[in-house]
Length: 291
Image 1 (spheres, helix red, strand yellow):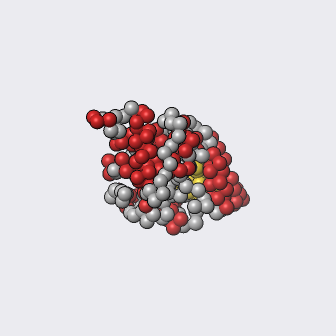
Image 2 (tube, rainbow, N blue to C red):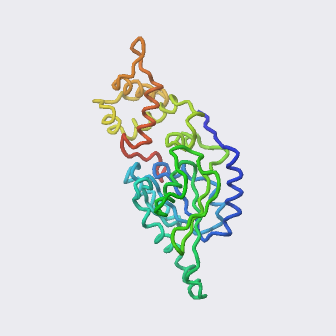
Image 3 (cartoon, rainbow, N blue to C red):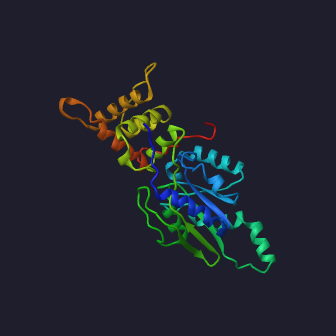
């Protein structure tokens, strides 16, 4: 699959981010804890020009807990502060203001020495589409300030959001990048809903996801689809072919049959993606620091 999706408004967003950086004290980069590398825009390091950064690992409730610990340690080793959150449920969001002030402790100390103790701290919120930025901001603010939907490309313009007398957030539209050099990045973004489903071959996408889960999380697949065992991957069998057999097995178990007794694998693929994104199959992380 060749997944590319770069709406025109993202070029405008990139320019806006570069222009607004001079107005903020720090950057908060929100990542999907299930795909912390694939959900990082590789341009952010250059765009943010060395600003202090808080990395928020969002959706930790859907990610493998042990993998999340390893990712948190990884980002701290690279000099970033880290906050784990489940923005939808609110977990972790109450610690945001304190985490920002700890990140900027030296700068705030200088402000205080200059008699500017009440100076407002401004933080830019960055993240790819559908990573949970608006939901996170609403939870931190304690009110609905940003529009949220479970699909990419909803936020289209910047918005300043006051959190308290001393903290303001700049909400920005999600920004992808023009080309995914590693196709696994495109797949991971598609699994989690960061690119629109209507540009995808859902059945092929389901084959890839099934193959990954069957290899790394077989027990979760067996439990989710009430299977006593998974078909074994045959020697020389490629990922898509193996994933297709897994789709057939799960679809047959669910009773998704069409005329002639064949399995409706497209329907099964859609169900798989819905259940994966909804956290109904378990907690999965699709990439690890060491890989």
